[in-house]
Amino acid sequence: MSTLTADSRLAHAAEFISLEADLLDQYDYQSWLALWVEEGKYVVPVEPDEQNFEDTLNYAYDNAAMRDMRVRRLTSGESMSASHSARTLRNVSRFRILGTEANGDLRVRNAQTLIEYKFDRHRSFAANVEWVLRPNGARLQIVQKVVRLINGGDSLTGLTFLP
Amino acid sequence: MKHQDYASLVKKDRVHTALYTDPAIFEQEMERIFKSTWVWVAHDSEIPNKNDWISTHVGKEPVIVNRDKNGTVRVMLNRCRHRGATICEKKKGNSPGFVCPYHAWTYGVDGSLKGLPLPKGYKDFDKSDYGLIQLRVESYNGLIFATFNEDAPPLKEFLGRARPWIDLFMKQGGGYPVKTLGEHKFNFPGNWKIQLENTTDAYHFPVVHKSFLSSLDGDTEELFSFMDAGGYVEDLGNGHSVMVMIPELVDLEEDLDQPIPERFAELAEELRKDHSEAEVRRIVRAVTGSGFNVNLFPNLACSMAFFRVLRPLSVDETEIRHIAIGMDGGPAAANRMRLRLHEHFQGPMGFGTTDDAEAWERVQRGAQAGEDDVWIMLNRGEDKTESNAGDVTAETGMRAAYQMWKEVMTK
Image (cartoon, rainbow over all chains, first blue to last red):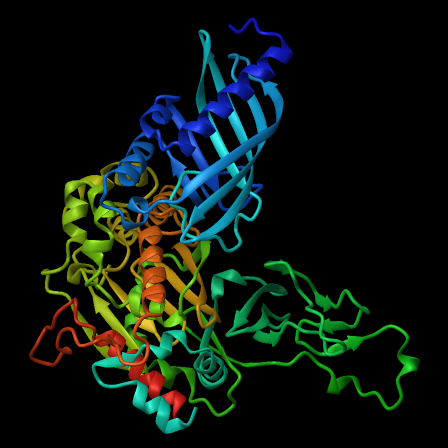
Protein backbone atom coordinates (compact mmCIF):
# COMPACT_ATOMS: atom_id res chain seq x y z
CA MET A 1 0.00 0.00 0.00
CA SER A 2 1.39 3.33 -0.98
CA THR A 3 1.87 5.86 1.78
CA LEU A 4 2.82 8.64 -0.63
CA THR A 5 0.98 11.96 -0.53
CA ALA A 6 -0.82 13.24 -3.63
CA ASP A 7 2.04 15.56 -4.60
CA SER A 8 4.74 12.99 -4.14
CA ARG A 9 2.71 10.42 -6.05
CA LEU A 10 2.64 12.81 -9.00
CA ALA A 11 6.36 13.47 -8.73
CA HIS A 12 7.03 9.76 -8.44
CA ALA A 13 4.91 8.99 -11.52
CA ALA A 14 6.51 11.81 -13.52
CA GLU A 15 9.97 10.55 -12.64
CA PHE A 16 9.03 7.03 -13.68
CA ILE A 17 7.46 8.12 -16.97
CA SER A 18 10.53 10.22 -17.77
CA LEU A 19 12.70 7.18 -17.13
CA GLU A 20 10.56 5.08 -19.47
CA ALA A 21 10.88 7.72 -22.20
CA ASP A 22 14.64 7.86 -21.75
CA LEU A 23 15.01 4.07 -21.97
CA LEU A 24 13.14 4.05 -25.29
CA ASP A 25 15.11 7.01 -26.66
CA GLN A 26 18.32 5.19 -25.73
CA TYR A 27 17.12 1.89 -27.32
CA ASP A 28 17.54 0.20 -23.91
CA TYR A 29 14.76 -2.27 -24.65
CA GLN A 30 15.74 -4.91 -22.08
CA SER A 31 15.46 -2.38 -19.25
CA TRP A 32 12.17 -1.23 -20.77
CA LEU A 33 10.78 -4.79 -20.74
CA ALA A 34 11.71 -5.05 -17.06
CA LEU A 35 9.41 -2.13 -16.21
CA TRP A 36 6.27 -4.17 -16.88
CA VAL A 37 4.18 -6.50 -14.77
CA GLU A 38 3.76 -9.84 -16.55
CA GLU A 39 0.10 -9.24 -17.45
CA GLY A 40 0.77 -5.65 -18.59
CA LYS A 41 -0.68 -4.34 -21.87
CA TYR A 42 1.01 -1.92 -24.25
CA VAL A 43 -1.64 -0.38 -26.48
CA VAL A 44 -1.52 2.07 -29.36
CA PRO A 45 -5.15 2.29 -30.50
CA VAL A 46 -6.09 3.48 -33.98
CA GLU A 47 -8.90 5.77 -32.80
CA PRO A 48 -7.68 8.32 -30.24
CA ASP A 49 -10.74 7.91 -28.00
CA GLU A 50 -11.05 4.13 -28.16
CA GLN A 51 -11.91 2.29 -24.92
CA ASN A 52 -12.54 -1.25 -26.21
CA PHE A 53 -9.10 -2.28 -27.44
CA GLU A 54 -9.83 -5.98 -27.67
CA ASP A 55 -12.65 -5.72 -30.22
CA THR A 56 -11.17 -2.94 -32.34
CA LEU A 57 -8.13 -2.48 -34.52
CA ASN A 58 -5.01 -1.11 -32.84
CA TYR A 59 -1.56 -0.19 -34.14
CA ALA A 60 -0.21 -2.28 -31.28
CA TYR A 61 -1.98 -4.37 -28.66
CA ASP A 62 0.84 -6.15 -26.91
CA ASN A 63 0.87 -8.63 -24.09
CA ALA A 64 4.20 -9.82 -22.66
CA ALA A 65 4.82 -12.25 -25.53
CA MET A 66 4.19 -9.60 -28.19
CA ARG A 67 6.39 -7.07 -26.34
CA ASP A 68 9.19 -9.61 -26.28
CA MET A 69 8.76 -10.34 -29.98
CA ARG A 70 8.65 -6.65 -30.80
CA VAL A 71 11.90 -6.02 -28.95
CA ARG A 72 13.49 -9.03 -30.62
CA ARG A 73 12.42 -7.66 -34.00
CA LEU A 74 13.89 -4.23 -33.22
CA THR A 75 17.21 -5.67 -32.07
CA SER A 76 17.75 -8.88 -34.10
CA GLY A 77 19.18 -7.29 -37.23
CA GLU A 78 16.59 -9.15 -39.34
CA SER A 79 14.39 -6.12 -39.92
CA MET A 80 15.65 -3.60 -42.47
CA SER A 81 13.64 -0.75 -40.99
CA ALA A 82 14.78 -1.49 -37.44
CA SER A 83 18.43 -1.92 -38.41
CA HIS A 84 18.20 1.55 -39.84
CA SER A 85 15.94 2.84 -37.11
CA ALA A 86 15.03 6.42 -36.41
CA ARG A 87 16.60 8.45 -33.65
CA THR A 88 13.92 9.66 -31.31
CA LEU A 89 13.64 12.31 -28.66
CA ARG A 90 10.57 12.53 -26.48
CA ASN A 91 9.38 15.25 -24.19
CA VAL A 92 6.94 14.12 -21.54
CA SER A 93 5.03 16.70 -19.52
CA ARG A 94 1.59 17.83 -18.25
CA PHE A 95 1.39 14.94 -15.78
CA ARG A 96 -1.94 14.45 -14.06
CA ILE A 97 -3.13 11.80 -11.64
CA LEU A 98 -6.51 10.61 -12.89
CA GLY A 99 -7.26 8.39 -9.92
CA THR A 100 -6.23 5.52 -7.72
CA GLU A 101 -7.63 1.99 -7.98
CA ALA A 102 -8.71 0.02 -4.90
CA ASN A 103 -5.53 -2.04 -5.14
CA GLY A 104 -3.37 1.10 -5.11
CA ASP A 105 -2.71 1.28 -8.87
CA LEU A 106 -2.26 4.83 -10.08
CA ARG A 107 -3.99 6.12 -13.19
CA VAL A 108 -1.92 8.86 -14.79
CA ARG A 109 -2.10 10.88 -18.01
CA ASN A 110 0.62 12.93 -19.62
CA ALA A 111 1.46 14.64 -22.88
CA GLN A 112 4.19 13.21 -25.07
CA THR A 113 5.84 14.95 -27.99
CA LEU A 114 8.13 12.64 -29.89
CA ILE A 115 10.51 13.87 -32.58
CA GLU A 116 11.71 11.23 -35.02
CA TYR A 117 14.78 11.73 -37.20
CA LYS A 118 15.40 9.46 -40.16
CA PHE A 119 16.16 9.78 -43.90
CA ASP A 120 17.33 13.41 -43.39
CA ARG A 121 14.01 14.59 -42.00
CA HIS A 122 12.30 15.27 -38.70
CA ARG A 123 8.77 14.13 -38.00
CA SER A 124 6.71 14.72 -34.88
CA PHE A 125 4.21 12.47 -33.14
CA ALA A 126 2.06 13.98 -30.40
CA ALA A 127 0.08 11.81 -28.04
CA ASN A 128 -1.84 11.66 -24.82
CA VAL A 129 -0.40 8.76 -22.87
CA GLU A 130 -2.52 7.04 -20.23
CA TRP A 131 -0.91 4.81 -17.64
CA VAL A 132 -1.90 2.33 -15.00
CA LEU A 133 1.13 2.17 -12.70
CA ARG A 134 1.48 -0.23 -9.80
CA PRO A 135 3.52 0.74 -6.74
CA ASN A 136 5.76 -2.17 -5.81
CA GLY A 137 7.90 -1.22 -2.83
CA ALA A 138 9.86 1.88 -3.76
CA ARG A 139 9.36 1.42 -7.51
CA LEU A 140 6.52 1.57 -9.99
CA GLN A 141 5.61 -1.03 -12.61
CA ILE A 142 3.56 -0.65 -15.78
CA VAL A 143 0.18 -2.40 -15.80
CA GLN A 144 -1.04 -0.56 -18.89
CA LYS A 145 0.35 2.07 -21.25
CA VAL A 146 -2.06 3.49 -23.83
CA VAL A 147 -0.56 5.85 -26.40
CA ARG A 148 -3.36 7.90 -27.93
CA LEU A 149 -1.77 9.55 -30.99
CA ILE A 150 -3.64 12.76 -31.77
CA ASN A 151 -3.54 11.84 -35.47
CA GLY A 152 -4.54 8.23 -34.80
CA GLY A 153 -6.77 6.87 -37.57
CA ASP A 154 -5.34 9.33 -40.09
CA SER A 155 -2.32 8.72 -42.22
CA LEU A 156 0.84 7.82 -40.30
CA THR A 157 4.18 6.59 -41.56
CA GLY A 158 6.09 3.40 -40.82
CA LEU A 159 7.25 3.62 -37.18
CA THR A 160 10.66 2.10 -36.49
CA PHE A 161 10.44 2.87 -32.77
CA LEU A 162 8.01 2.31 -29.90
CA PRO A 163 5.84 5.38 -29.28
CA MET B 1 4.51 13.59 -73.54
CA LYS B 2 3.17 11.98 -76.70
CA HIS B 3 1.40 8.63 -76.77
CA GLN B 4 4.22 6.84 -78.53
CA ASP B 5 6.62 8.12 -75.89
CA TYR B 6 4.61 6.44 -73.13
CA ALA B 7 4.69 3.24 -75.12
CA SER B 8 8.48 3.42 -75.32
CA LEU B 9 8.75 3.56 -71.52
CA VAL B 10 7.16 0.15 -71.00
CA LYS B 11 8.78 -2.88 -72.52
CA LYS B 12 7.69 -6.45 -72.01
CA ASP B 13 10.25 -7.14 -69.29
CA ARG B 14 11.15 -3.69 -67.91
CA VAL B 15 9.85 -0.17 -67.35
CA HIS B 16 11.63 3.14 -67.47
CA THR B 17 12.51 4.75 -64.14
CA ALA B 18 10.68 7.92 -65.24
CA LEU B 19 7.47 6.08 -64.35
CA TYR B 20 8.46 6.58 -60.70
CA THR B 21 9.94 10.04 -60.93
CA ASP B 22 8.42 12.24 -63.65
CA PRO B 23 5.74 14.63 -62.29
CA ALA B 24 4.35 15.16 -65.81
CA ILE B 25 3.73 11.43 -66.19
CA PHE B 26 2.02 11.44 -62.79
CA GLU B 27 -0.39 14.19 -63.86
CA GLN B 28 -1.24 12.23 -66.99
CA GLU B 29 -1.81 9.08 -64.93
CA MET B 30 -4.37 10.93 -62.85
CA GLU B 31 -6.24 11.86 -66.04
CA ARG B 32 -5.81 8.73 -68.13
CA ILE B 33 -5.96 6.08 -65.41
CA PHE B 34 -7.73 7.40 -62.34
CA LYS B 35 -10.32 9.35 -64.35
CA SER B 36 -10.91 6.67 -66.94
CA THR B 37 -10.89 3.21 -65.35
CA TRP B 38 -12.91 1.73 -62.51
CA VAL B 39 -11.44 2.75 -59.15
CA TRP B 40 -12.36 0.94 -55.93
CA VAL B 41 -14.04 3.26 -53.41
CA ALA B 42 -15.62 1.21 -50.62
CA HIS B 43 -16.84 -2.10 -49.29
CA ASP B 44 -20.58 -2.60 -48.83
CA SER B 45 -20.17 -3.05 -45.09
CA GLU B 46 -18.83 0.50 -44.73
CA ILE B 47 -22.25 1.88 -45.64
CA PRO B 48 -24.67 -0.85 -44.47
CA ASN B 49 -27.71 1.38 -43.80
CA LYS B 50 -29.74 3.90 -45.73
CA ASN B 51 -28.28 7.42 -45.41
CA ASP B 52 -24.85 6.05 -44.39
CA TRP B 53 -21.92 7.82 -46.03
CA ILE B 54 -18.15 7.85 -46.02
CA SER B 55 -15.75 10.39 -47.47
CA THR B 56 -12.87 9.12 -49.59
CA HIS B 57 -11.12 9.83 -52.91
CA VAL B 58 -11.10 8.73 -56.51
CA GLY B 59 -7.55 9.51 -57.58
CA LYS B 60 -6.95 13.04 -56.36
CA GLU B 61 -10.62 14.02 -56.15
CA PRO B 62 -12.51 13.95 -52.84
CA VAL B 63 -15.79 12.05 -53.05
CA ILE B 64 -18.70 11.00 -50.87
CA VAL B 65 -19.82 7.37 -51.11
CA ASN B 66 -23.30 6.88 -49.72
CA ARG B 67 -26.37 4.69 -49.70
CA ASP B 68 -29.42 6.79 -50.42
CA LYS B 69 -32.87 6.32 -48.93
CA ASN B 70 -33.78 3.86 -51.69
CA GLY B 71 -30.68 1.79 -51.04
CA THR B 72 -28.85 2.99 -54.16
CA VAL B 73 -25.11 3.40 -53.69
CA ARG B 74 -23.86 6.72 -55.03
CA VAL B 75 -20.45 8.28 -55.46
CA MET B 76 -20.51 12.07 -55.69
CA LEU B 77 -17.84 14.74 -55.78
CA ASN B 78 -17.36 16.13 -52.29
CA ARG B 79 -17.73 19.75 -53.37
CA CYS B 80 -20.63 22.12 -53.12
CA ARG B 81 -21.88 23.30 -56.50
CA HIS B 82 -21.91 26.88 -55.23
CA ARG B 83 -18.35 27.82 -54.26
CA GLY B 84 -16.62 24.48 -54.04
CA ALA B 85 -16.40 23.84 -50.28
CA THR B 86 -16.28 20.21 -49.20
CA ILE B 87 -19.65 18.99 -47.96
CA CYS B 88 -18.30 16.28 -45.64
CA GLU B 89 -15.02 16.52 -43.77
CA LYS B 90 -15.67 13.68 -41.33
CA LYS B 91 -14.74 10.15 -42.36
CA LYS B 92 -18.23 8.72 -42.04
CA GLY B 93 -21.72 9.41 -40.84
CA ASN B 94 -25.43 8.88 -41.30
CA SER B 95 -27.61 11.80 -42.28
CA PRO B 96 -30.83 12.39 -44.25
CA GLY B 97 -29.08 14.94 -46.46
CA PHE B 98 -25.98 17.06 -46.88
CA VAL B 99 -25.66 20.72 -45.94
CA CYS B 100 -22.72 22.76 -47.14
CA PRO B 101 -21.37 24.57 -44.07
CA TYR B 102 -20.42 27.69 -46.06
CA HIS B 103 -23.79 29.06 -47.31
CA ALA B 104 -26.10 26.18 -46.33
CA TRP B 105 -26.91 24.85 -49.78
CA THR B 106 -28.75 21.65 -48.94
CA TYR B 107 -28.63 18.42 -50.92
CA GLY B 108 -30.64 15.22 -50.68
CA VAL B 109 -28.93 11.86 -50.23
CA ASP B 110 -29.51 11.35 -53.97
CA GLY B 111 -27.32 14.43 -54.59
CA SER B 112 -30.13 16.71 -55.77
CA LEU B 113 -30.08 20.32 -54.62
CA LYS B 114 -33.07 20.66 -52.30
CA GLY B 115 -32.78 24.21 -51.11
CA LEU B 116 -30.64 27.25 -50.43
CA PRO B 117 -31.00 30.37 -48.29
CA LEU B 118 -32.45 33.54 -49.84
CA PRO B 119 -33.29 32.04 -53.24
CA LYS B 120 -34.70 35.35 -54.47
CA GLY B 121 -31.12 36.50 -54.98
CA TYR B 122 -30.93 34.31 -58.08
CA LYS B 123 -32.66 34.87 -61.40
CA ASP B 124 -33.63 31.97 -63.68
CA PHE B 125 -32.18 29.51 -61.23
CA ASP B 126 -33.03 25.86 -61.86
CA LYS B 127 -32.07 23.71 -58.90
CA SER B 128 -31.85 20.65 -61.11
CA ASP B 129 -28.76 22.20 -62.73
CA TYR B 130 -26.91 22.20 -59.42
CA GLY B 131 -26.98 18.68 -58.02
CA LEU B 132 -23.78 17.13 -56.69
CA ILE B 133 -21.66 15.73 -59.54
CA GLN B 134 -22.19 11.97 -59.71
CA LEU B 135 -19.80 9.28 -60.88
CA ARG B 136 -20.78 6.01 -62.45
CA VAL B 137 -21.04 3.30 -59.78
CA GLU B 138 -21.11 -0.49 -60.00
CA SER B 139 -20.28 -3.17 -57.48
CA TYR B 140 -19.20 -6.79 -57.42
CA ASN B 141 -19.48 -9.13 -54.43
CA GLY B 142 -19.45 -6.25 -51.94
CA LEU B 143 -16.70 -4.28 -53.67
CA ILE B 144 -17.92 -0.85 -54.80
CA PHE B 145 -16.15 0.84 -57.72
CA ALA B 146 -16.68 4.21 -59.39
CA THR B 147 -15.50 5.83 -62.59
CA PHE B 148 -15.63 9.26 -64.18
CA ASN B 149 -15.79 7.55 -67.56
CA GLU B 150 -19.29 7.05 -68.98
CA ASP B 151 -17.79 4.93 -71.75
CA ALA B 152 -15.91 2.51 -69.48
CA PRO B 153 -16.94 -1.11 -70.04
CA PRO B 154 -19.25 -2.64 -67.42
CA LEU B 155 -17.44 -3.42 -64.16
CA LYS B 156 -18.11 -7.12 -64.58
CA GLU B 157 -16.26 -7.05 -67.88
CA PHE B 158 -13.42 -4.94 -66.47
CA LEU B 159 -12.89 -7.39 -63.59
CA GLY B 160 -13.20 -10.30 -65.99
CA ARG B 161 -11.20 -13.31 -64.87
CA ALA B 162 -10.49 -11.70 -61.49
CA ARG B 163 -14.12 -12.29 -60.47
CA PRO B 164 -13.84 -15.96 -59.44
CA TRP B 165 -10.82 -15.02 -57.32
CA ILE B 166 -12.79 -12.27 -55.63
CA ASP B 167 -15.51 -14.84 -54.90
CA LEU B 168 -12.92 -17.19 -53.36
CA PHE B 169 -11.48 -14.33 -51.30
CA MET B 170 -14.88 -13.52 -49.82
CA LYS B 171 -15.13 -17.06 -48.42
CA GLN B 172 -13.11 -15.83 -45.48
CA GLY B 173 -16.41 -14.63 -44.06
CA GLY B 174 -16.61 -18.25 -42.84
CA GLY B 175 -20.34 -18.41 -43.59
CA TYR B 176 -20.96 -14.77 -42.60
CA PRO B 177 -20.82 -11.73 -44.83
CA VAL B 178 -17.38 -10.08 -44.95
CA LYS B 179 -17.22 -6.90 -42.91
CA THR B 180 -14.52 -4.23 -42.59
CA LEU B 181 -13.11 -4.01 -39.06
CA GLY B 182 -11.09 -0.80 -39.19
CA GLU B 183 -7.98 0.23 -41.03
CA HIS B 184 -4.34 1.22 -40.81
CA LYS B 185 -3.56 4.21 -43.00
CA PHE B 186 -0.07 5.43 -43.75
CA ASN B 187 1.96 7.32 -46.32
CA PHE B 188 5.25 6.48 -47.88
CA PRO B 189 7.43 8.84 -49.90
CA GLY B 190 7.37 6.93 -53.15
CA ASN B 191 5.43 6.42 -56.35
CA TRP B 192 2.11 4.55 -56.20
CA LYS B 193 3.21 1.88 -58.64
CA ILE B 194 5.92 0.71 -56.22
CA GLN B 195 3.06 -0.39 -53.98
CA LEU B 196 1.02 -1.73 -56.89
CA GLU B 197 3.93 -4.04 -57.69
CA ASN B 198 4.49 -5.13 -54.11
CA THR B 199 1.19 -6.98 -53.71
CA THR B 200 2.23 -9.30 -56.49
CA ASP B 201 5.85 -9.68 -55.36
CA ALA B 202 6.48 -12.92 -53.46
CA TYR B 203 10.20 -12.67 -54.15
CA HIS B 204 10.72 -10.05 -51.41
CA PHE B 205 8.85 -11.92 -48.70
CA PRO B 206 11.57 -14.09 -47.09
CA VAL B 207 14.05 -11.21 -47.31
CA VAL B 208 12.08 -8.17 -46.21
CA HIS B 209 9.88 -10.11 -43.78
CA LYS B 210 12.52 -12.24 -42.11
CA SER B 211 11.81 -10.65 -38.73
CA PHE B 212 8.09 -11.37 -39.15
CA LEU B 213 8.79 -14.99 -40.04
CA SER B 214 11.06 -15.32 -37.00
CA SER B 215 8.24 -14.11 -34.76
CA LEU B 216 5.91 -16.95 -35.81
CA ASP B 217 5.51 -20.38 -34.30
CA GLY B 218 7.04 -23.26 -36.30
CA ASP B 219 3.89 -24.33 -38.15
CA THR B 220 2.91 -20.80 -39.13
CA GLU B 221 6.44 -20.01 -40.24
CA GLU B 222 6.30 -23.07 -42.47
CA LEU B 223 2.98 -21.90 -43.91
CA PHE B 224 4.50 -18.53 -44.83
CA SER B 225 7.64 -20.09 -46.27
CA PHE B 226 5.98 -20.43 -49.65
CA MET B 227 8.90 -20.01 -52.02
CA ASP B 228 8.69 -23.60 -53.17
CA ALA B 229 5.18 -24.67 -52.22
CA GLY B 230 3.53 -24.95 -55.62
CA GLY B 231 2.44 -21.32 -55.86
CA TYR B 232 2.19 -19.29 -59.04
CA VAL B 233 1.28 -15.92 -60.49
CA GLU B 234 -1.33 -15.55 -63.22
CA ASP B 235 -2.13 -12.61 -65.48
CA LEU B 236 -5.92 -12.20 -65.28
CA GLY B 237 -6.20 -9.53 -67.97
CA ASN B 238 -6.90 -5.75 -67.74
CA GLY B 239 -3.89 -5.31 -65.46
CA HIS B 240 -5.25 -7.66 -62.80
CA SER B 241 -3.37 -10.68 -61.52
CA VAL B 242 -3.44 -13.31 -58.84
CA MET B 243 -0.47 -14.53 -56.83
CA VAL B 244 -1.17 -17.88 -55.17
CA MET B 245 1.25 -18.34 -52.29
CA ILE B 246 -0.42 -21.11 -50.29
CA PRO B 247 -2.33 -23.40 -52.71
CA GLU B 248 -4.07 -25.30 -49.88
CA LEU B 249 -5.70 -22.02 -48.81
CA VAL B 250 -7.23 -21.15 -52.17
CA ASP B 251 -10.70 -22.48 -51.37
CA LEU B 252 -11.47 -22.02 -47.68
CA GLU B 253 -14.53 -24.25 -47.94
CA GLU B 254 -12.50 -27.26 -48.99
CA ASP B 255 -10.50 -29.60 -46.74
CA LEU B 256 -12.70 -28.88 -43.75
CA ASP B 257 -11.98 -32.34 -42.38
CA GLN B 258 -8.28 -31.54 -41.90
CA PRO B 259 -7.04 -31.35 -38.28
CA ILE B 260 -7.32 -27.92 -36.70
CA PRO B 261 -3.83 -26.37 -36.45
CA GLU B 262 -2.43 -26.13 -32.93
CA ARG B 263 -2.38 -22.33 -32.96
CA PHE B 264 -6.18 -22.31 -33.45
CA ALA B 265 -6.94 -24.98 -30.82
CA GLU B 266 -7.89 -22.46 -28.14
CA LEU B 267 -10.11 -20.51 -30.55
CA ALA B 268 -11.80 -23.73 -31.71
CA GLU B 269 -12.52 -24.68 -28.11
CA GLU B 270 -14.08 -21.28 -27.46
CA LEU B 271 -16.19 -21.54 -30.64
CA ARG B 272 -17.47 -25.01 -29.74
CA LYS B 273 -19.51 -23.45 -26.92
CA ASP B 274 -21.91 -21.92 -29.47
CA HIS B 275 -21.22 -23.66 -32.77
CA SER B 276 -21.41 -27.07 -34.35
CA GLU B 277 -18.16 -28.85 -35.23
CA ALA B 278 -18.77 -28.15 -38.92
CA GLU B 279 -19.23 -24.43 -38.22
CA VAL B 280 -16.17 -24.36 -35.98
CA ARG B 281 -14.01 -25.84 -38.73
CA ARG B 282 -15.36 -23.46 -41.34
CA ILE B 283 -14.81 -20.41 -39.11
CA VAL B 284 -11.33 -21.47 -38.00
CA ARG B 285 -10.24 -22.05 -41.59
CA ALA B 286 -11.66 -18.67 -42.58
CA VAL B 287 -9.73 -16.93 -39.78
CA THR B 288 -6.47 -17.96 -41.48
CA GLY B 289 -7.37 -15.88 -44.52
CA SER B 290 -6.88 -16.76 -48.17
CA GLY B 291 -3.61 -18.09 -49.52
CA PHE B 292 -3.47 -15.61 -52.40
CA ASN B 293 -3.42 -11.93 -53.39
CA VAL B 294 -5.70 -10.64 -56.13
CA ASN B 295 -4.16 -7.47 -57.49
CA LEU B 296 -6.79 -5.26 -59.16
CA PHE B 297 -5.60 -2.45 -61.39
CA PRO B 298 -5.22 0.33 -60.39
CA ASN B 299 -5.85 0.68 -56.66
CA LEU B 300 -7.14 -2.40 -54.81
CA ALA B 301 -5.71 -5.71 -53.73
CA CYS B 302 -7.66 -8.43 -51.97
CA SER B 303 -4.58 -9.52 -50.12
CA MET B 304 -4.69 -12.73 -48.06
CA ALA B 305 -6.79 -11.41 -45.15
CA PHE B 306 -7.27 -7.69 -45.82
CA PHE B 307 -7.93 -5.05 -48.47
CA ARG B 308 -4.93 -3.02 -49.58
CA VAL B 309 -5.97 0.31 -51.08
CA LEU B 310 -3.57 2.78 -52.60
CA ARG B 311 -4.09 6.46 -53.35
CA PRO B 312 -1.52 8.43 -55.32
CA LEU B 313 -0.85 11.83 -53.72
CA SER B 314 2.01 13.04 -55.92
CA VAL B 315 4.70 11.47 -58.07
CA ASP B 316 6.66 10.58 -54.94
CA GLU B 317 4.00 10.32 -52.21
CA THR B 318 1.40 7.56 -51.80
CA GLU B 319 -1.21 6.80 -49.19
CA ILE B 320 -1.89 3.17 -48.29
CA ARG B 321 -4.80 1.74 -46.34
CA HIS B 322 -4.74 -1.77 -44.94
CA ILE B 323 -8.37 -2.49 -44.17
CA ALA B 324 -8.97 -5.31 -41.70
CA ILE B 325 -11.88 -7.60 -42.51
CA GLY B 326 -13.82 -10.11 -40.48
CA MET B 327 -17.16 -11.82 -40.12
CA ASP B 328 -20.28 -9.66 -39.96
CA GLY B 329 -22.29 -11.09 -37.08
CA GLY B 330 -19.65 -13.77 -36.59
CA PRO B 331 -18.20 -14.89 -33.25
CA ALA B 332 -16.35 -12.15 -31.34
CA ALA B 333 -13.48 -14.52 -30.55
CA ALA B 334 -12.89 -15.17 -34.28
CA ASN B 335 -12.98 -11.48 -35.16
CA ARG B 336 -10.60 -10.70 -32.28
CA MET B 337 -8.15 -13.20 -33.65
CA ARG B 338 -8.46 -11.62 -37.10
CA LEU B 339 -7.73 -8.20 -35.57
CA ARG B 340 -4.68 -9.49 -33.69
CA LEU B 341 -3.33 -11.20 -36.83
CA HIS B 342 -3.83 -7.96 -38.79
CA GLU B 343 -2.04 -5.93 -36.10
CA HIS B 344 0.86 -8.40 -36.10
CA PHE B 345 1.79 -7.84 -39.76
CA GLN B 346 0.02 -4.71 -41.00
CA GLY B 347 0.06 -1.02 -40.34
CA PRO B 348 2.58 1.58 -39.17
CA MET B 349 3.70 -0.65 -36.27
CA GLY B 350 3.19 -4.01 -37.98
CA PHE B 351 6.00 -6.53 -38.16
CA GLY B 352 5.65 -6.59 -41.94
CA THR B 353 4.49 -3.18 -43.15
CA THR B 354 7.26 -1.17 -41.52
CA ASP B 355 9.87 -3.12 -43.48
CA ASP B 356 7.83 -2.91 -46.69
CA ALA B 357 7.57 0.86 -46.28
CA GLU B 358 11.32 1.10 -45.79
CA ALA B 359 11.92 -0.92 -48.98
CA TRP B 360 9.50 1.18 -51.03
CA GLU B 361 11.06 4.41 -49.83
CA ARG B 362 14.49 3.09 -50.78
CA VAL B 363 13.23 2.30 -54.28
CA GLN B 364 12.14 5.92 -54.70
CA ARG B 365 15.45 7.20 -53.33
CA GLY B 366 17.50 4.82 -55.46
CA ALA B 367 15.46 5.65 -58.55
CA GLN B 368 16.94 9.16 -58.48
CA ALA B 369 20.14 7.55 -59.78
CA GLY B 370 20.62 6.64 -63.41
CA GLU B 371 17.15 7.78 -64.34
CA ASP B 372 17.85 8.21 -68.04
CA ASP B 373 19.34 4.85 -68.88
CA VAL B 374 18.74 2.39 -66.04
CA TRP B 375 15.48 0.48 -66.10
CA ILE B 376 13.26 -1.20 -63.50
CA MET B 377 13.46 -4.92 -64.17
CA LEU B 378 10.36 -7.10 -64.31
CA ASN B 379 11.88 -10.07 -66.09
CA ARG B 380 11.76 -12.65 -63.33
CA GLY B 381 9.99 -15.96 -63.84
CA GLU B 382 7.86 -17.35 -66.61
CA ASP B 383 4.19 -16.61 -66.88
CA LYS B 384 1.83 -19.36 -65.90
CA THR B 385 0.63 -21.50 -68.79
CA GLU B 386 -1.85 -24.34 -68.93
CA SER B 387 0.89 -26.90 -68.50
CA ASN B 388 3.18 -24.95 -66.20
CA ALA B 389 2.12 -24.34 -62.62
CA GLY B 390 4.60 -21.50 -62.68
CA ASP B 391 6.72 -19.79 -60.12
CA VAL B 392 5.30 -17.84 -57.17
CA THR B 393 8.19 -15.38 -57.45
CA ALA B 394 7.50 -14.62 -61.13
CA GLU B 395 7.02 -10.92 -61.86
CA THR B 396 4.04 -11.79 -64.03
CA GLY B 397 1.63 -9.60 -62.05
CA MET B 398 3.83 -6.55 -62.48
CA ARG B 399 4.18 -7.21 -66.19
CA ALA B 400 0.39 -7.46 -66.39
CA ALA B 401 -0.14 -4.18 -64.55
CA TYR B 402 2.39 -2.28 -66.68
CA GLN B 403 0.95 -3.60 -69.93
CA MET B 404 -2.41 -2.23 -68.78
CA TRP B 405 -0.69 1.03 -67.81
CA LYS B 406 0.69 1.26 -71.32
CA GLU B 407 -2.66 0.49 -72.90
CA VAL B 408 -4.52 3.10 -70.90
CA MET B 409 -1.82 5.77 -71.15
CA THR B 410 -1.60 5.48 -74.94
CA LYS B 411 -5.30 5.26 -75.68
